[in-house]
Every structure is written in C-alpha cells, then in structure tokens.
Amino acid sequence: MRHSWLVVVIAVVSGCHLRAGYDAAARVNGPLDAVMNHASVSRTDGVVNLPATGGHNYSLEAGFGNSKITVNSLLAVHDVTSNSFTPGAGYLATTLGANVRWMVLRWKGLSPTLAAGPAKLMLVDRSSGERVWGNAVRFGGGAQYQLGPIAIYGDVYREMVAFSSGAANGTTTLDGVTVGVALQP
Image: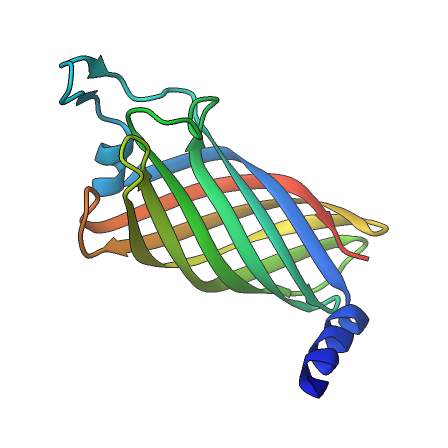
C-alpha cells in the first residue's frame, strides 16, 4: 500500500500530460488494408455489404513526465465512421500502447519530438464481435509549439503490426500524419 501512494505522488509531482489528435493523412499497407476496405456478403441473406468510406483516425495520449521526457499510454482508433461502433459488416481497428516521448530541445516555444513504444492492435469483427490481437511497435517524430500549458503539435508516425491469425494474418504497416492539441502544465 505504501508503494501505491509513492507512485501516485511521483505522477502528480512530475506533471500529467494529455495529447489529442486527428490524422490529417493516413495509409495502410498489408493484409489489414484488404480487411478494412473490402466488401462482404452476408451469410444469412446474401446481401453485399460495402465497406465504410470516409473514415478518420483519432489518437489520445495520456501520461506523466517532465518538460523533456514523458511516459504515455496511447489509444488510437483507425478508419472510424459514424457506423463504426454499431453492429454490422466490417471491422474496427484500435491500437492500445505505451510510448516514451522525448522533447529534443526547446527554442522559443518550438520543440522537435521523438516517440517510440510497444503496442497491441485489436481488430474487432463488427458482425460477430470476434477479436484478434496483433503485436505492434509504433514510432515517430514531429514538432510542437508551446503556448503556455497548451501546445499545438504535428507528428509523423509508423506502426508495424504482426497478426498471427485471423482475417488480417501477416504484417501490416500503418503510416500517418497527426495534428492535434496537447495539455502540458
């Protein structure tokens, strides 16, 4: 119990960080691309279900650290549309991970950043609810401009995922450019 309080005190003293972003550009190469972008036929009534178009990627990071290095948890959803969270044809892909982010230097509010860490990508079949997990590594770099406790940032990332079974069996690469807002008191 004593160690739990120590962890909480360290997290509070070191400062909490929050980043929310939207992918301005994204690309998927590999088996996951085929799974996310192909039509399917219903087994019960033979209706062709077309894949959702116009989906977007969103990410959220939360962690703690100082002005140079932060340790963060990551949640990213891929190719999300208004129908993504309802039962139906298609798949939902979500990345859960952790990273270490390093602010290389700070010059008049501008900071280049580097980040890397392990992740898991969960692929959910929206019609059956079946889940398949893939092991991943996510890394990238970017820049942010600090305005007091708020920062505007842009990151370029690469996520490499390996599925050992399921609809997206094999290795997939996800690339993207994320823009967003960070809270760093």
